[in-house]
Image 1 (cartoon, helix red, strand yellow):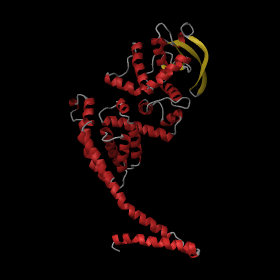
Image 2 (cartoon, rainbow, N blue to C red; image 1 turned 90 degrees about the horizontal axis):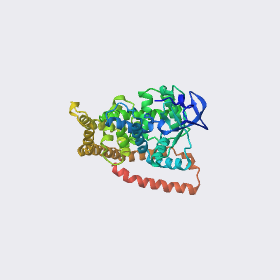
Image 3 (cartoon, helix red, strand yellow; image 1 turned 60 degrees about the horizontal axis):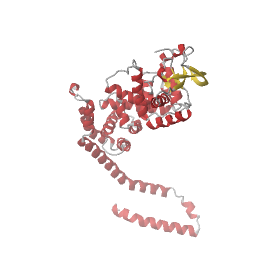
Length: 410
């Protein structure tokens, strides 16, 4: 790859514009000149968090450790498809805007041409150039200083500031956001959770919840024998149920019970027995958080967990030729779904009945407490009309107690 900083003053195809873009680099605000650059000098950033799940799926399906960038145009064509599929409507709107008004916001690139900010704008310009044979579109951008291509943390900080911070909110999918926070903090260890919260302008407690949600996502994919296959979570829209799982498990203080509850929730989330999976997981959580029924429910659910997990993880992993087909077979098993659904409904009914039994006791105790709170001396000071109203109400109360006393054989 050529160094654009070294050739920008001598290459007539790279034109310095009159514009500047202010960036916060290493804690300092700096004004960078904006250059107009031919599209063939540039290439996509495969670390772009917005398309993390698309790249994850492509690498898994093609058994790749990383994307080959030796053929830049082929590489760009692959990434472009991911960018478009991540939000076709946004591409359409941006493309119309650029066609009518030209590019309004400069991008940011490294000296080798890798785009750090502006992948969608670059995509639209590529499409417009293909749609107009003979035309030559250009990308307006800042070129960062030499050496930044090796400063992963600084690049990530800059990306987060631009795409998730106060300056500009970008339409990350919830799953892509989870993948990004997990990779940044747990895998690449570029940032601490405190740094991530500050840079992305979200509260620390919220950042911790997102990280916990991301950790449960990683564990769930391992549970279903799809480690690292984040695209599955995107397709199944698991961000809602994962957020519910975080809320449910936070209420459990015992480590062993929390682990068992997590496996039960993973099993139900995978089998998706009925309707809205987020609401369904919330219902399972209400049973797990019930003080009287949770122990029995857990004991009842563990055979289903073992059965589901065992079919996804056979003792001889060599027999598991196609994990994807196995995934489909197990998740589509109507007997497993039926068992999960009926068990949940059974315990919901038990809790509901117990609640109905407790309701009259609670109401009577509440009534007694209300009567105890009455100050008799105040009644003695009331006028005739007010005393008459109280007499009438007391008679009604006594009449209402008769069927209760009869039911109690009093």
